[in-house]
Image (cartoon, rainbow, N blue to C red; front, top):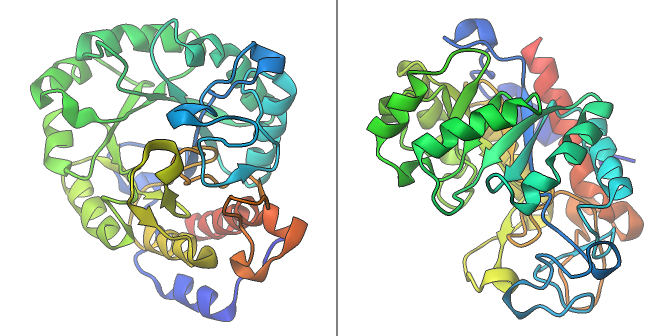
Length: 329
C-alpha cells in the first residue's frame, strides 16, 4: 500500500508553476518524462565467484557491506537474471519510462551484463539509456566509438557523467557529427559549458551540488540555450560507509524526496531524472531496504513501519510519477 499524499503536499504540488515543459515547447522532442539511474555492478560468490562492490572500502559482506543501508534483496548479484528481472518489474511498476544503466566502457563488467539488463528492461516496457561513466581513457573520440557500440543494443540516449572533465570544443566536434535519434546529455549545472559542447540537454545527478532550489534557474538557462533540461531528484545522500565522504543529505523521513520532486515539477524542465534506483554506496537508492542492526532503514518514511517501510521509496516514486504524468497531459 502506498503512503497517501498529504493535503499539504498536494496543495504545494498544484501551486508550483510552471509545470514541466511539454516536448512541443522545446527545440528537441522527448517522449521520456521520467528516467532512473541503475547500477548493474554488484556481485556475490554464489553467482559470480566473488563479491563485487559490496566489499568496497573494507567492507566484509554479507555482515558488513559498503552501504549505510541494507538491501531487502540481500547481498545480491546484478548478474542474476532473476534479480534483474524483478528489479525491472519493480521499476516499471512505478511508471518510470527509462532506465539509465551505469556503463564503464567496452569490456567492463557493466558492458558484459548490458545485453541481459536491456532484455529485462524491455521485457517490461522500459526504454534503456546508457550512463557513460568516466572510465579510464574516456575521450570524445572514445565516446563516439561507444555510441556505435551501444546502438547495437538499441541504445540512442547517452548521459555523460562528469562531462566537464573534457574541453567543450572536443564535445562540440563530436556532437556536431551526430544526428537523431542519438541524444547526448551532459551531467552539469553549468549550462554555458553544455551549450558550448553542443549537447542535447543537461541533467544534474549530484544532489549535493544541485538541490531543488537550483532547478528552475538551471532549466531556464538551458531552454534559453536550446537545451533539454532533466533535473535530478534523490531521497538523500550518505556515502560514509562506502567512501568515507562525510557529507550527508538527510532523508528526513521522506521530506527530502518530496521537496526535490516538488522543485522538479516546478522547474519548467522537460523530464525528471531520479538518483537513483540502487546506488547503495551513496545512499541515494529507492530500491527496498530492510531493517538490520548497524544500518539505517526507511522506518518512519511517510509514517511507515516494518515491512511497509521497506518499499516506501519505490511506492512514493510511483506517486510522484503519476503526478508528473497528470501534469504533462
